[in-house]
Image (tube, rainbow, N blue to C red; front, side, top):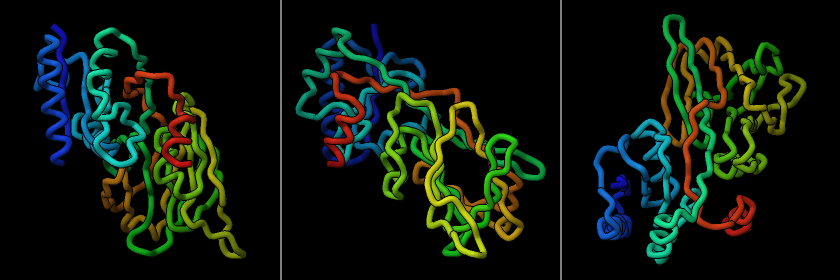
Length: 264
């Protein structure tokens, strides 16, 4: 017997749809499991924010995920609530594809320890409050620039349609394995020289960030909308993680069809 795990947010609509989905899977002889590690399918009921919550609560599960959109934009979510029966039929008949999505990883080094964070959409690195930030930025072992400005955003292809897009960064097809680095209000004058456009890094490259002495006091790192403050950071290394999440797609809609539908 196949097992399914159903995750939802606390909105009235999502709770109702999740209950309906449970009944439909039970009728189809699926077991509704409470253990996400022991299932064949994860059903995410909500919006894109609910999917991000699922990722961080369960450490980016690699099981196939089907999204039912009860939110607003729904870029990750594939199924409309009114199409639940079609969703069930296509899943049971195997009429779907599984599309992998990259995850970004940040390794944050201190004098006596290292911590790791992951993000599906992006990492934002900025200073405390409204003060400008000064960062030495390199790629692998090569120094590139001394950045000055509000901060930088490092996004996956999935995140290219989120905060990155609002900053004027490029939209990137999720089939591409890369990281995009976009500046936030960069300073470019006689005193400071910063890159003013985003750059793209191949999947094996590392982005290295060294905070200046004035920024070691406190640095804000925001990952998928969750902010944490850190002191005395020595170095930040950002790469694509080897782990990927897997979203179920039920039709021939391409990434660019979704861009046209959601943004144009």
